[in-house]
Length: 428
Image (cartoon, rainbow, N blue to C red; front, side):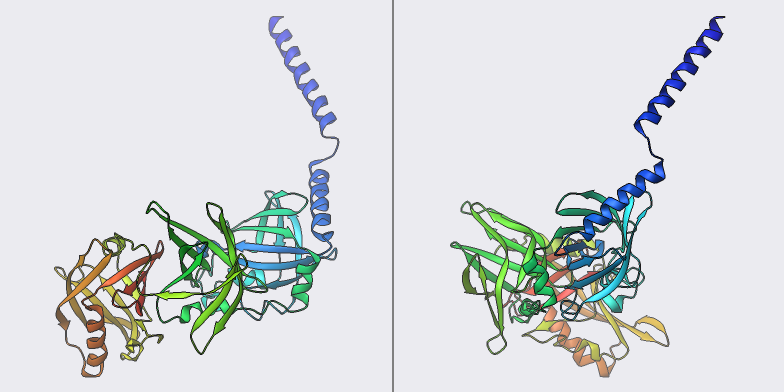
């Protein structure tokens, strides 16, 4: 009797629960999700001036690519992109759809400017072969407000968001006003280090055009060094930062009115309405005292470009080495020595037949690293000997090098003599 009573209580509770669920959910799950998707569709379509879009590919280490989107109810979208100068002024029409996957998702389902970032062919976007820039074209919808939609890529977790555009912003795209790419020329300065001055404070500007990031460094009145790294995207007159740089009462949101003078190799711009010329510098504003140590203790490093000197890429001509593939710097590569490995492809096989050998570098408290040649390993061919010798001599400049960490796997090694020679090393 007692057991029957318990069963009756349980059955009554289940029945009551079912009645309650039926009251709360008067629609089926499919009906509810379709209603949500319809609401999202109307949100993106009914923005009268379209949307500004920002995608942060996982492979760009904080960098961003900006877009403009105009969606319609026929599942078509017109778009622009600042990925390159052509896509910034050329409208592309593609298809899109909203679909319920594990959560509502916005999918760009035909090849478009969005797809370019995720293309696995590295020659298309400059990323890695097989994965591109680790971006996405299917995005889970995280949140929707009246003027902002936040998204997360479903494969590579790329963050993205859409912001309602103004009529002026919409017109600037369709009227092809996004033509100012002058900021790209900042890499043409003869000196590696560049500076601007705002409100009496000197700021160092380090630009990584590969990841579309800018690192701003300054020293406060107490002698403390501050660094902020932010993504940047192109505007009608210059660039804007995804994260403004804030120093007390000063906020730097980007650079406007950017102009490049090819005759003097200088750039002018304005910050918060004040115009100025970007100044070159021979040394870092605040040298990284342990940069060289971290680089040397880290891994094997490679470069395919060699030294950039006085504005000339591959100034020592390493690409002219017979069957050249890449140079490496290998701490302990010669057992008791470091080596610069000259890797060649011969008969479809990677060869290391010779390498200049170095003693472990000397690290100075001011951030400089000095290299000392010891001996050559292997027999250097007569055809390659001059190029290898010039590289060894440059490497062992007595003034040494500053190391600038660009991201977790990239360092720039900058000549301390005058800041006009540098090489970029990638982790191998």
